[in-house]
Length: 299
Image (cartoon, rainbow, N blue to C red; front, top):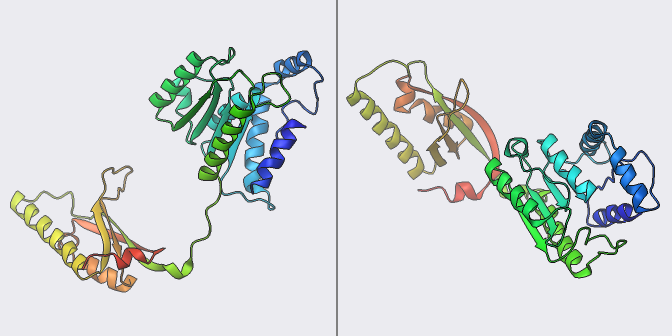
């Protein structure tokens, strides 16, 4: 009932909230039974169950979620982290004092931002374990926010003896802000404030591999930059620039965002000295973006 209550609170905030039962419908009536149910959970089956729930939120025609997050307390908090490691398309994960992982290699699979909620007087997930988790997440390059409270384990469970109302209320405020930031779909854009641009991806031309003298290379590059500067002065491009990384077999070397029609953009690209020399080629696609990009384009 407690978990159903939390699902209702999430639904009241505008989310499609799916409460996951990892116990096969069995309900404990005391702590000993609860511990036995937890110990009996098949980890492989539980993860498959969570992944199926994650897929359901995106696939069910009543929901079609474009963003999805996971939230768990204690045993569920550990599984929240496990799902983040197993689902690279997850958008957010909240871990309330759940079992942690401090192996950076395992954590490196996480793509979602993670919020961790912990009690400094928790003997099951002590501060030292949280410290190790933070270090491992940093080493793995993962985004992590940690909130610590002067409270015991399960301090956010109002049905437990260690419930701390002040800490629980503050933690829930943090969770709501975190989910709103990472999971709530943004409002539809104001289409009246949008317009069509032409996005040009500059790639290697047929003659880029041919060796030419340094003087010719420098002259072509200077003419190429002058051509871009001229288009910028006339307001024909909103921005331009080289790429810092070039992965793949056919890498994008630079980009141009044109404010003119596709036909005009094709003509301007063809006039580029490096394109004429066969050192570059361009792939052009139309792109829908905010009008202010064109309005702020240099003249």
